[in-house]
Image (tube, rainbow, N blue to C red; front, side):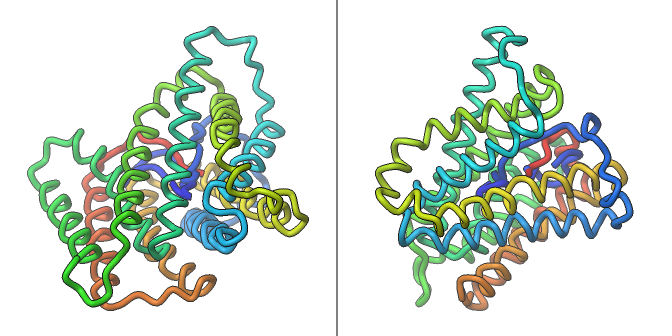
Length: 318
């Protein structure tokens, strides 16, 4: 998500590009230093890492374009995951590898569409619009009438964010790309459950990230041109990989050992708010009251869905 790293849907029992990558919490190794940190602090730290990573990524758009930035983010994220999980493709059949490849293409599409949206609309708004994808997946699997209220609030939030008659209007293509990223995020959630059953730990994710990196390689090279391999771009790319993958992955997996699923879902619902703060502090993006109200409505809808217990089998987004 997303940067798209991205987080699971409201109320998810598991947590990642990103917005990015999901790993079953039960199979992760405990981190001694992080075990002493309160779980809510770890979740909030993961959210902040993902969103400030996205804000740092946006600073590269002028030189590398969204595609070049996505390539660096996925490339460094892939290296990190390969070192951590050391997948063995030869131990899996053709169907498993095909699933990982499809998952990788979804990851590439999700991240590229989100970064393209971020190039056109403020970070907080892009994340609020993208969250609609996983929210729709969660509500689609529910049979509770109350969930229609959360859908209505989410729709109201989108209308407040995209009001075409307002003086401060958004880029239409940017809005469409953010919603597209949300759609890919929803597909990511559905595919992730199958991937987790076929691969141990994060092995499937590591393979998928490699596929995603190769998928964006051509557009990344064209967009980045000679600036892609400069020292500054590589340093920032490594920082984005750490902020969007390694740090939130470590924080969320440890938090999920101890935190109740509905509490995790409520905390993850705060992502648009943290994204708006990151956009303000890093990118100087000031939002008008109408946009802040729209973000608040989407957050309330997401919190409501979380409290209702939706999406309990969804993935963890690192």
